[in-house]
Length: 173
Image 1: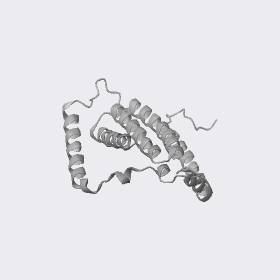
Image 2: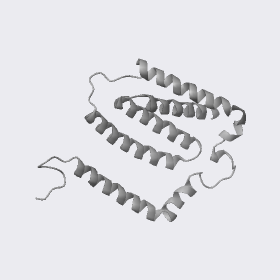
Image 3: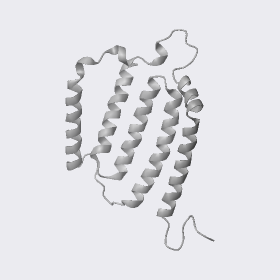
Image 4: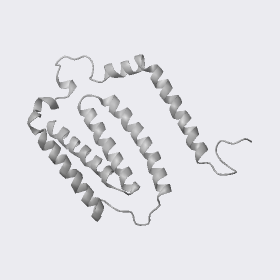
């Protein structure tokens, strides 16, 4: 399990570097999907399977919208890939910075910190994320309603901003 968590965290770091170093929106959107998948894998490895599933579905929906808008706005015939000169230079600089920062904090990592929440109790009745799900719906129900309202308002704002001169999605009939 420790090796799987190590691979997921390394993939998360590489995905963040892929997003930060790439000027082309096609490959940056793919990097965001990689980051979302690896981050949800880390959450699932630590006992948050429901939260991981919810976040992955939300991230994939958001990435689909981001990819559609970026593909529509930046239609390049030959986009820069990860192995282009400038992109590879930025990727190498980010990798060097990550190795440098990792070397500074190397002495404080122990294998005990990689233990998931479900492996700590032998006779546990609940999974590690079930208490958080109940608390999210009990204490945070109002915040969920406000968040849904803000997302709906944002949808209408984006639809109004992108409509044409005479036709659009929200118009007087």
